[in-house]
Length: 194
Image 1 (cartoon, rainbow, N blue to C red):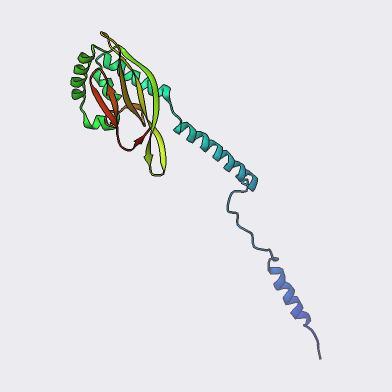
Image 2: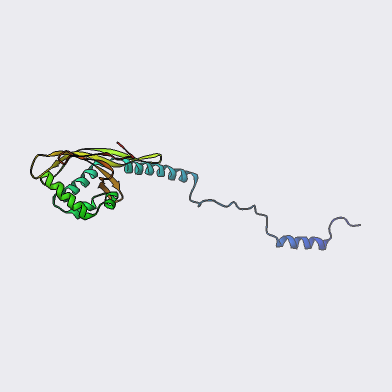
């Protein structure tokens, strides 16, 4: 009687075992690149939050210098009867409602009524915001100052400028413009809050 495997059986088992690869535990698959460790990920998130808050602050802070420059550019062009340039300084909504020739005709009449236009003096810039869902974006500004005519005394005025993709533009359709010399007073349009 024999107990245990035979010599030929042992040789066959050894041959079969040699053909098999040794056991290796399954490899875990990485979800992100090897260089992205938890500390580096935290550092990237902190930097993103800081840069995002700086960017948001820049986008929403008032730019009174840019508003003043846009208004003075439009006034200078109007004073020189360059109505093509003035038309380019209007907001998209005004350009959609008004042709360049209509603007030139009305502008010439207004300049005659004022006694010409030497320039404008800006005395105050107040930001106005427009509600877009839960956000109040400061994308408009109410500007007050003096119209300085070529002939006659300066007169008070106020006008609204809006920020569009190309910068700040005079926007009469948003409302919020007045001129004592021309007897015009239009309140600020709906959707804007000072």
